[in-house]
Amino acid sequence: MVGAGLSGAVMARKLAEAGHLVTVCDERSHIAGNCYTERDADTGVMVHVYGPHIFHTDDEGVWDYVNRFANFLPFVNRVKTTSGGRVFLLPVNLHTINQFFNKTLRPDEAKEFITSIADQTIGEPKTFEDQALKFVGRDLYEAFFKGYTMKQWGVEPTQLPASILKRLPVRFNYDDNYFFHRFQGMPENGYTEMVEKILDHDNIELKLNTRYSRAESASYAHVFYSGPLDGYFDFELGRLGYRTLDFERFYYDGDYQGCAVMNYGDLDVPYTRITEHKHFSPWEKHEKSICYRESARSCEEGDIPYYPIRMADEKALLARYVERAGQEPGVTFVGRLGTYRYLDMDVTIREALDTADAYLNASANAQKL
Ligand code: FAD
Ligand code: UDP
Picture 1 (cartoon, protein in one colour):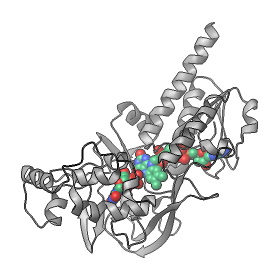
Picture 2 (cartoon, protein in one colour; picture 1 turned 30 degrees about the horizontal axis):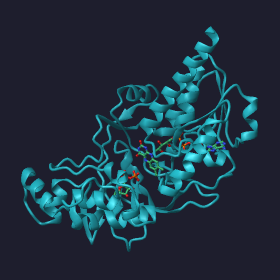
Picture 3 (cartoon, helix red, strand yellow; picture 1 turned 90 degrees about the horizontal axis):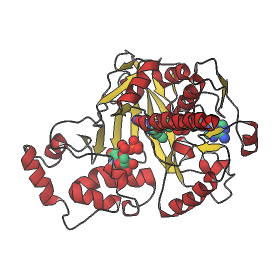
Picture 4 (cartoon, protein in one colour; picture 1 turned 45 degrees about the vertical axis):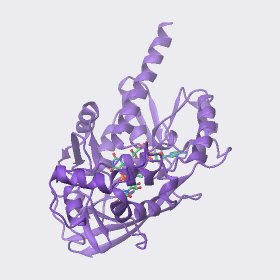
């Protein structure tokens, strides 16, 4: 199993429980991949080291699974955004609309109003900009989405697919829950402890600080690889584009911003958002605070790949790598990096469970023959 993130850990556990001996390696010095959390030595705050992670899902099986390994406490993601010197609630909801346009609209009035300012000439939106103009109109688009998106993705929103914005709802009531899934929460003692428990099985051997390379594939009955797809092939066909993130850490004596996530919609503010980590664990009391100022840029060699870009050029290159991957005997490519897709944690876990099941079923059938 290459990678001790959620993909690697969940698959390893499933195979180990079925009686297989599993080696899990990770080139990092820790488990849990990008979900890694640790306590900050100065403040005692649980920090989401690779950016904020909120668990949310509609998949009851996945929710039961994570609750086997961690005690999840209630946490609802309520994101704010600063734009033009004012603070608003996200996702765009009735409060945002009334505050932004200085109105007191009821839900059906707001719906009518937004329809009147939205661009109805756009048919099926293809680009991010079309999607925004069609659903919220130019004013809200420019205040909350245009600048943020240019900072996040480094290109004009006219060059991005509509699907990126489709993840965010527009609500005509006062619900400011960022997500709309049935289950949402935060593991009481962080994600690292949860992954530690998933990996805690006699049949699992963990090797940290261990980088895996393609040449080793023949030494194992089967390899599940959750590292970067292009990296596995030594970037032979070129590099798949990623955005990387920079986190500028700073401390504050007290409560810096009063919420966990504050986005910044204006293009002239160089960062996209500030996360104040103690607000991710509201059941803990901390006087001091640690915050991350987050900004995105193009991923170069040696940077951590965070967001797959998936524009037309990348899709063509991806297709060639996927073809290569399909021809690699005894190796299955899994997870966020192995399949070059943006996957939330719940989808990552679902896919890991299903891929392990498929492997176990195929092995059982092969033995019967
Ligand atoms: P990873 O966590 O990336 O793990 C892959 C592991 O493989 C890494 O530890 C890496 O070191 C290791 N590896 C790579 N190559 C090699 C090699 N050659 N040899 C050895 N080891 C190797 N999801 C949510 O549900 N909610 C959120 O709020 C949320 N927030 C996010 C915020 C950010 C900024 C980002 C980037 C992602 C967020 N996600 C969120 C998604 C979440 O991080 C992923 O679903 C999850 O990390 C995927 O797990 P994985 O195991 O596939 O990948
Ligand atoms: N987005 C935006 N303004 C915001 C928040 C999000 O323009 O204040 C856009 C941005 O392009 C982002 C996308 O909506 O990539 C999806 O937002 P989400 O919060 O799901 O981003 P992620 O969790 O992937 O960082």
